Length: 567
Image (tube, rainbow, N blue to C red; front, side):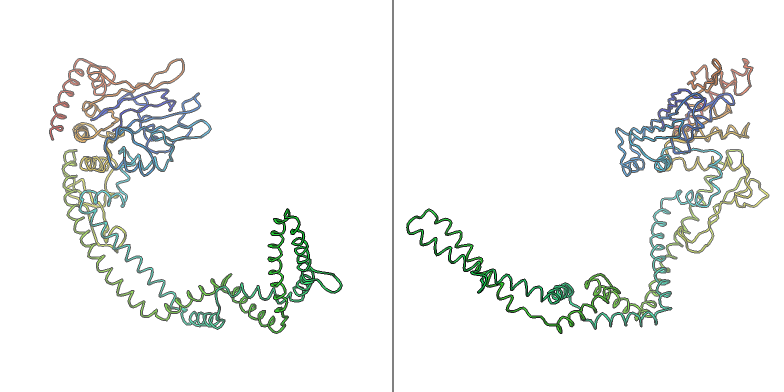
């Protein structure tokens, strides 16, 4: 429920705070006073377009803030939770602001959000009824939503159908792909076989390329390696012209130091360290010498290894950067070849599967159609009852459910048929309903559907009284009051028949002060309501008779409202 709407610098509104209550909140005032501006401001809170054009003349920004009491409405709480917005104590505060440079901000309980999120949230908070909503009824998708929402069983049946229909579409797409691929299967088979044969004939081993590269590098540089080894051995072991090598030199050092230790043991630690180093160097020298003895330059082996590497490089350029990639390509090609060679069998199996799924889908669609036809009859009767009460005593309305190809909503073509005259058969509502008739049809629908669990707790009727009067106006007033018995309703009206049904009556007045135009919103007392109803009924001049008539209208309205509350 909308508790408070506060507006700053919005068109004629400099600063206005409006407190709403449960039941019927009526807004009245002279034409041009700014009643529609309030609806525009509320629309901004619900995600409608907001531009700098709305900023009050002389101001640099505008702001609209709404406080809602959402209680334990799970659909709203779940939506806010999904969008990481906290809901302390069931209170929801939405603030929207825009500056003269076009920069806008949206806050929901202090969290920044987007217009898209705000629009989706707005649909859960308030149901606005105006000319656009009348036209929305003509949309096929909205007609399905209206009918399907009238019976809980339809939701379950539609969910089961859509699951089966999704499987059917998926398998039909798979069949289409297989049949398309089978057209060039012969050429594809030849190519895959050639690729697999080329890879298999190479008999690749994982890691083989790394070993080959190391061996080729060694053989290609055998001469340099041999020179390095010879020079190292000469330094380690010495030669005829170079004197003793490192190993022989360390032997001499150790022999001298051990002789010295017989007279002074101060260098025993140094002797041990040199001895350890000597043994390590001697062992390493043996390794270097053995490596040199085994080293052999073999041009034939090098050519063989390079030839093998050329084979691998050729395959890497075609099938992957590594041997693992090449082998994976071959495995994938093998599976693809298997699939192609089994196309006929797979296609036949897939067709059988599709036939079974389609049969099941059609059965679910038939169940859905049956439920829709039953629900359509009940819903049409309920809407007709309200239409008759709204002064359209001969009106007839039907939900025509006819067969259609399978689609995401079933196998139905839905159309709302309407006739306002007894001698005319019901026809498509788009073609035969006038604007006034369409408005009353939508009001009748609102009266029937207002108390669905998923419907917003607040409804707005924006000048629903356009073009009506007399008895019809009274019937419209009673329908709105009937809805307000269980919901919060905000209604802008020019008709006293509707205004007298108010639980909260707000008067909108425009004033010019020092050349500046201001719009104010004032809650009316009981006495002020009598005067306003009299003004609306009789015009500017209020007589004693018009005041008595207004009092009588208010008494009768109160009696009616008590009856609706009991229902």
